[in-house]
Image (tube, rainbow, N blue to C red):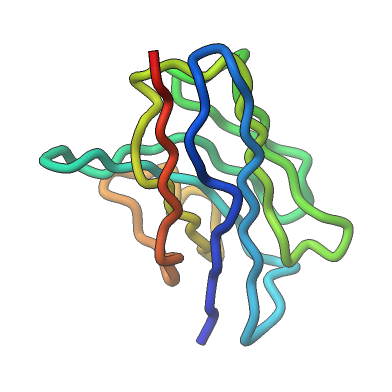
Amino acid sequence: QVQLVESGGGLVQAGGSLRLSCAASGRTLITYAMGWFRQDPGKEREFVSAINWSGGSTHYADSVKGRFTISRGNAKNTVYLQMNNLKPEDTAVYYCAAAQQIQSILTMPPVVGSWGQGTQVTVSS
């Protein structure tokens, strides 16, 4: 069983930046794809970004392209989401996800083996 723990959320003004981290434990995720989703209360969870096992393939929702960057740590068990030029509409709980295939993260609904507990991101105007 994989455990995912997110960190790095917080309160930031519009135009600011945050870096989210997701650390995995329980088993190695070196061959797993990983991704980020977000959810506002009363709304469905939405895809934000995904990265394949090697880090060579990345995907972004149109709403965050050019502002967010996903990357993996050298040990491949950590994934980051650098969020720049944040907007109030980016406010949500951000969740980390892991799956054996990146297509499982990109499909709707996602077929994800493990979810983190979420980290709150609040962007004030």
